[in-house]
Length: 322
Image (cartoon, rainbow, N blue to C red; front, top):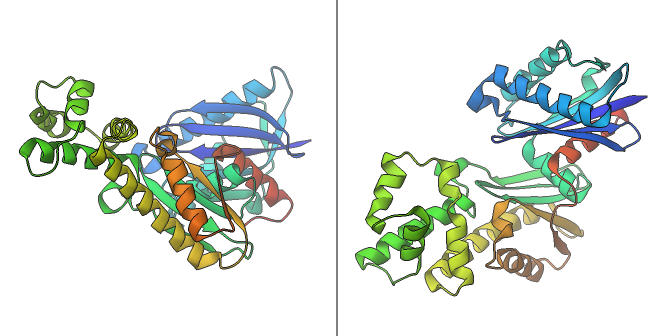
């Protein structure tokens, strides 16, 4: 009996799904970050090993050996040929590790490496045809049609892109609060909301929080719910910010649709923290998309990205890999 592994490696955590070659999920494990561009290749290998070990331990308390026939790694930041070669070398190191009772029986065609957008698409929809609109700390839209043609829009990071992301929503909210405080723009409840949430004596103290304390991208993105809540409570300024995020995501998604889905029906899976807000951002987005493209269906994920990675590993066994 053989098994496959699906790895979802991101900046905050690594998830592994252990799947039997019949398609049954047997175990799931989590570990720390596996974005090698941020933490280095050795730390990435350790995280992946830990996630695999946790998935194996959940599946089996006592067994002589597990033969891994295929592995798919969907890792953040892996898009260039040079990145893929680095990850291939990582898999070679992985096969030398002491992950007992695991043995490896991998052919080159059964080592599958993708970016995290594709595994989110496959996990979310349950197939590798459709579109994923990821809007969390950052944002990206990725699609694949039935002919295998792909199209990506966005994913350029918080400085060059990430329109519609939690980071951009939070920054726009803080900018609006400061403009209102200056008297340059209309008043907004965001001034008091940021003060209370961050325990500031004055909104001017945002300078201390953002610049002097070194608020990072994730810390800033975590402030997006303040804007979302204000919008849901009727604040016009906050609502305009949310609407701008919706339209940015609609435009990016429309670009993918126009490029690879001309007439066929398809599903769009929405992933990421932005879609969980209370300002009806998901409903707004879905309404705009379906009005423009009646054959589209907007859904929440059916399964997690690591499941999508395991599914792609399984497909490689059947000779159906990308």
